[in-house]
Image 1 (cartoon, one colour):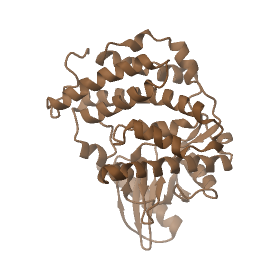
Image 2: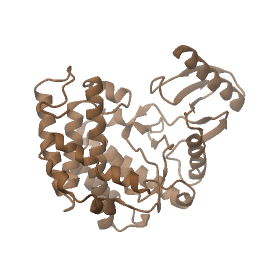
Image 3: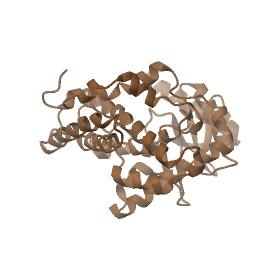
Image 4: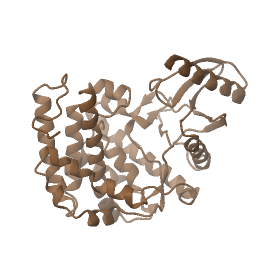
Length: 351
């Protein structure tokens, strides 16, 4: 059954490609694995990316946004056509950022990270030029979403003294609530960017885009557990690359960024331990190759380090920073004690 569904999917993509481009498909590859929505389609004279998502509304939103951004920016794919719910876009390159950042010498990582931050801010600037914040969904605006995000760090109780449990949830919700005034790509994990043959770094996968504060995009990058750049360096990069035309002054921007990163890190850590319980720890190479959740003790420790650093930047989240610090020590212990091949997430952790 799985093979028949896969074949039907490939046939559908091939038929759409031949209709849009008027030439035969040579072959179709799945760079992110066959379970992903995007495929690399090799035609007679070019290579394009075909995207067939389960939710056709997201496909249409992505096509719309790419077309609107195009006159103002070339740091995202070009939408080449839409047929039978299959969107075709330009191939931005095979050198994914999550692999590149780990492969370059340590002294070059800061420069690459700065390029990644700058490209995000330039895409947001293009979004303002295209007035996209008035034409895309506003994200994280309902109370349920905000409460779920605000209570996310409570999972740290299993790995720390649980200072987070004493915080006022309503106060956290108020601090995290923000109107949708800025276009955001969303999901700016490093696996969603690539470097092309022209050596330009571009971002892809705009299916979850919308409008919010704007700092969320940088939070996704900084809070990517596989992102091997220190939080201290990332904070300096944000300051150096800050775009004063974004609608916020630098101090307010940094304050909200720190707040959002803290809670985002808790969400990523929650995902990591959930997957570790289910699948056991994975190798770092496998995580990066398939752009998977960072189910490795080193990645768990990294996300705790980031949460600790940015949590300490705000008096409201300082107790969470201490919880992250204790959790970081625990995951470092797991790494030292060699639990990689077992399903152990943390000794003494409550079920």
